[in-house]
Length: 120
Image (spheres, rainbow, N blue to C red):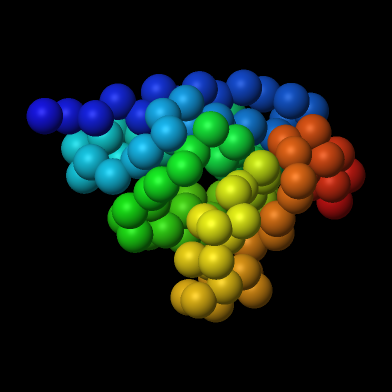
């Protein structure tokens, strides 16, 4: 059964805020569908940055890390930045354990992330 990650993408100051609406993101098909949506948005808009808002997420599979790295590479191709906002401290540990906390910027909320990335 395919999981719907309930993805929304909103433009704020030419920064894409990608919000996951699901509390659990673990289905391969759901993650692949989210990746397609995000790719399409980035290709069509070439934002200055992308913020991934995890405020509603309580669990995600390691495939989400791959998605984030893939989007980071895509956005960096045209000079954009990627940041993560509103992530649960327990989920932040995954980034620390994998040393991905050194390549992503983290913000307490999407608005502070938009302000930081939009002003780079």
